Amino acid sequence: MLDFFSQYWWTIAIVINYILVIIAVTTILFKSINPTKTLTYIIVLLVFPFFGLIVYYFFGQEYRKNKIFNRKDVLNNKLIKSINKDLKIDPETLSSYEANIEEDQIRLIHLLQRNDKSPLTKYNNVEIIINGENKFQSLFKDIESAQQHIHIEYYILKDDRIGTQFLELLCKKAKEGVKVRLSFDDVGSKISSKMKRKLIEANIEFYAFMPVLFPRFTGKMNYRNHRKIVIIDGEIGYVGGINVSDTYVNYPESKSYWRDTHLKIIGEAVFTLQTQFLTNWNFVSETTLELNRSFFPQNKVKDVQPVQIAASGPDTDWANIMEAIFFAIVTAEHYVYITTPYFIPNDQIITAMQVASKSGVDVRLLIPDQSDSWTAKHATNSYLEQLLKANIKVYRYEKGFIHAKTMVVDDVFTTIGTCNMDYRSFNINFEINALIYSKDKAKEAKAIFMQDLEDAIVVDYQAWEERSNFERIQEAYCRLWAPLL
Image (tube, rainbow, N blue to C red):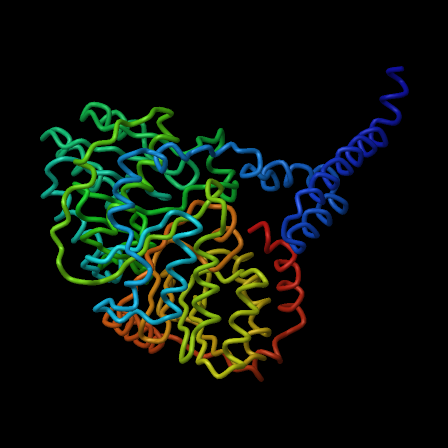
């Protein structure tokens, strides 16, 4: 028997591999997921023995269907329900807002309210922050003034130069009696044991989101918490694209330029950010935090600036952010300006952009000229011809790496947050965006976009058509992996 196995071990291994492949393919087909993603997994499983099974094991498991993320306790809490009820505005009164919300924007509001219990908040002050150095200056000042609690949730948190400043400031506030709760993604973050001891000594509660055994080798593991949230005393909130790392700060001695966008919100929308943080906190801490009104203090803002917080992830029933982006594009009448570091969209977004452009809407896309990922760069390039054919203007940012995730539509609607225009953000990772229904903020976001275009070059369709066959091969290869990136 041993001789038989030693002589035919490879054949036996291949047979076992394809038995498992047949089981996996059958499982995939019964899930009724996106056909492109289905085909990608099937090709990988059939063409790459053993490796395909590993890829499917790490990236293909649909935890949403398996109910692993059972995180609805916070949303069902009586206090949260009461607050959301207080915030919810009668749909019949939306059209009479001082902010003059357009009819299509009202439909978008209703879409999100039905999908994810995301109430429209009326009284807010919103500040668009450009780049990490400005964000941290503002954030540190607000943390210094914290009196009761600081809640933090980041995808990337490192104890480098800016990270050490950030964490030491939190320790200082914790020693002053402010309650600090910190959650960070285990794959994206890197905190030394020495710093963790400091956090423990300062009585800071912290948890890694879904810990993995080898973080360095699992940079694309599924179901990561890609959100960047800070809530201070339930009154001030930060959300956007900027993580806690020196990469995001343009120091005078920095060799490269990092262009990013973040939001500071004061007002009722912070309550929704708080709810999302508390939902995640119960999950990572495996405890049920007792909620009280101090997490949701009386709002002092009187200015009308309607904001809705859209969250999506494996714990939501719908792809809320993707649906909001899709709807905003297809209902645009004048222009759609999109900035994203990674453009690996699904068919719905591509079609929406093409239809909008062909119907006369000015559709523009700003992406990095040089990506931080070879695969993502060529996967993005594989979609550009479809856009250019539809007369969509594509720009490449040359000043540095642009990491902002923004979209502004028709001088009335803006979204800024953590969601990239890619499969991973739409369907796999935990993301959060602020949807702002304000003409003033839309005009400000539009001006920022136009300013960024001054540091970008437009992609010429004729020149793009003449790119080398080698480039096309790389694009085709990376396009195959697009649903898994």
